[in-house]
Length: 126
Image 1 (cartoon, rainbow, N blue to C red):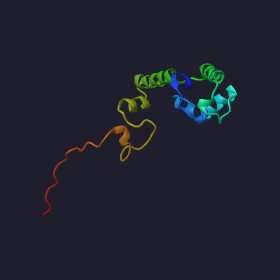
Image 2: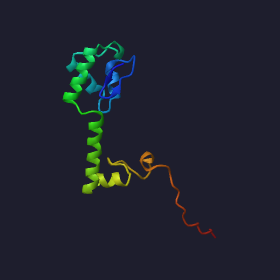
Image 3: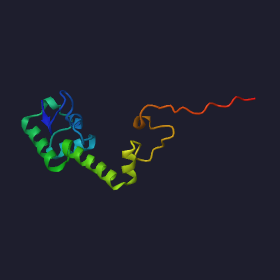
Image 4: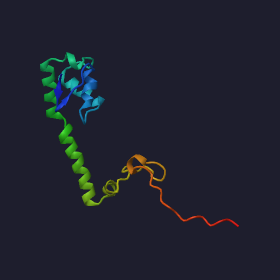
């Protein structure tokens, strides 16, 4: 089993798909990495030789930020927004959508389940 950037790549999948299990690598980046490492896209993760795994690992370390480093950068950026009090930071602090989505009807994922607020009882109609 191939281990790259601290992640066990899944068995019996194409290496192009297997690399996307690493945080910070999508399909395009995976294809670019494999082109740089001269590994065919169709090859399965089980069929990789040790040299090919080492080459992929070297390309990742030299050219890309992935996993822990990338997570630390993203967390640091969010913390910076919160500290300077920017609009994005305030939205992060209040646990609301950050990128301009509407919140009147949607955004239940970000806001959590509905909390019903008790209102006044309506006066009887005469």
